[in-house]
Image 1 (cartoon, one colour):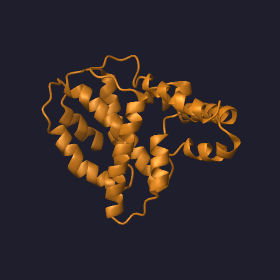
Image 2 (spheres, one colour):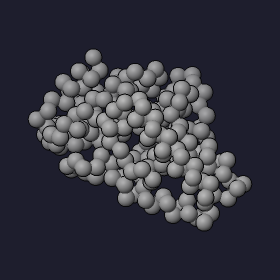
Image 3 (cartoon, one colour):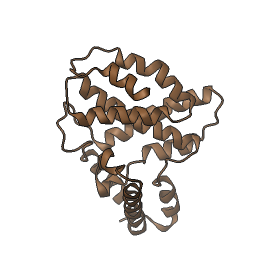
Length: 208
């Protein structure tokens, strides 16, 4: 019982595989994904700050580092399934939030419950920090899918993941998104590839 239970539960994030059921050259755990999202978000927030935005860094680190904690209870549900309909997405979110809240209620000491509820909440919202989290989360989908396509994986799931994530990113109005599209993404698609899929072409189509 207590916070020890929370600390022990973090090990489970290392055992949850991203994009389950598909052939992958490289497996990624939810724990590794969460760490990368923090790194992306930190850099994206620096870019935003250099362009005049005020960043609540405490909030940013809290929501990015804990944004997928609820997957301990429901696993990694593939994006096409999760977003098949707004109703389904809402139901999945309600189930995840309910299970996180139950965990907090059962295991976290009373004096820390409010802190955990705040830190483990759904962090994606219309604040600059919430939008940065959204971009960082989608960026990791882009990088994971790109790495598979680059090495010759022809699973259409990764083409969809790559294109859908790019479409989501381009529609978020942040300076760091502009920087990503103009400076980082071109470097990515310029790398050598063994893929039979024209990565540059599908990138251009996704951003059209």
